[in-house]
Length: 216
Length: 240
Ligand SMILES: Nc1ncnc2c1ncn2[C@@H]1O[C@H](COP(=O)(O)OP(=O)(O)OP(=O)(O)O)[C@@H](O)[C@H]1O
Ligand SMILES: [Mg+2]
Image 1: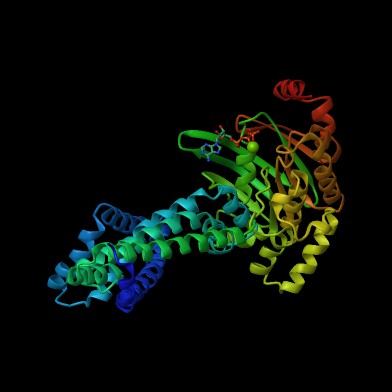
Image 2: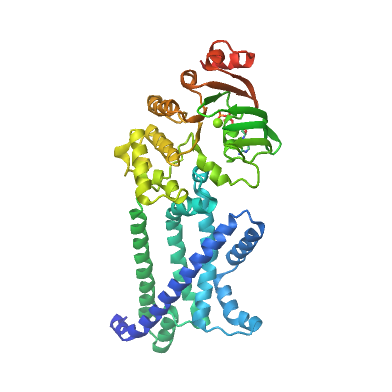
């Protein structure tokens, strides 16, 4: 009754969707990681201004749904700025700023969790604050970040499926397009789901491997 | 080497150091004893500005460390510190722990830093542990690595904050041995300790701290056999 062999005909189109899903996830998360590192350090900074900016960013993003963020950035922001973004750029921006806020909290938590004695040991040896962060605190915090970062990466990859509403030609968008034209919802959506599952499960395995290789 | 004048330290409303005066001469070993909470650690941590000083002056190696013009990182390279909890860097091997600061601060080449590191590990009896991680070592071994790490900066003086308090009793001796050796070589040392045997044997002078002041300052001989202050007597009766 269900004919999964027909999925083969749609693989090129789904493959194109997969390409955009991965492209947006990777670029978005790379930028998101940079944002997270900067604003995460802002959240532990003694500089009031930096702290407040970082806190506002984190709270605004955490307090609003990613779907609303996507629609706002694609449909509302251009009206304010008089500058039209193409949907793929908008998609990258959404994933970057959304994941950035959560990653900032991960960074803050991990850096905070490193024993205070580590900073003191570094400083007592004459390393300055920046050097101590770079050589002592950050590498240890990074290891602790891996599991929650992995979680966030997976959430963000799944969030890209919401970008179909702003016309990003990613996997879910292609799936919807095919299913509505060929009335094969079961076959296509099952396949789409499997694609996400494979991506995320591979990512899980990769992260577990990296974590194990950091041996201390 | 170290001059402390009317040092006060407050945490909020809690005045922990209430006017400390003291001098530490070059090559002198000064032990600081006293009850828990009397401010020994705070005092020691003020000497390299790990704690902000509320008022008073601390002059280390000729520099007033509270002076804005003083480069505190430079001062800290001259003042090694050993902590109760070792505070080794867990993500680095033993030799990397020892090599890090000489490379980054003293700008030694990796080769020079390694040579220096290996020599120091040899000195503390841990040459064969160079490539292990701190978590693979016993507490006593970790503390000896911490001493080697501090010495790698070739400091002019060393501060020890209860270096053996976190150790199992059978591991205390090996750390004290290393410290005795250092003292013998003429290192200037300030040692906060509960090891009265060590203080008696190694110290040139003992400071008894109580409630944020130095209650008595004397040679170990007088402190342990004939203390001038009643408080010192009470304290020693309790701990000895
Ligand atoms: N960071 C801090 N913030 C607030 N209070 C502090 C802080 N550090 C120390 N204190 C307080 O200062 C007092 C002295 O502490 P300190 O650690 O110097 O004592 P100590 O003589 O080293 O004691 P111990 O023998 O237990 O190590 C204590 O009452 C402690 O609660
Ligand atoms: Mg203490």
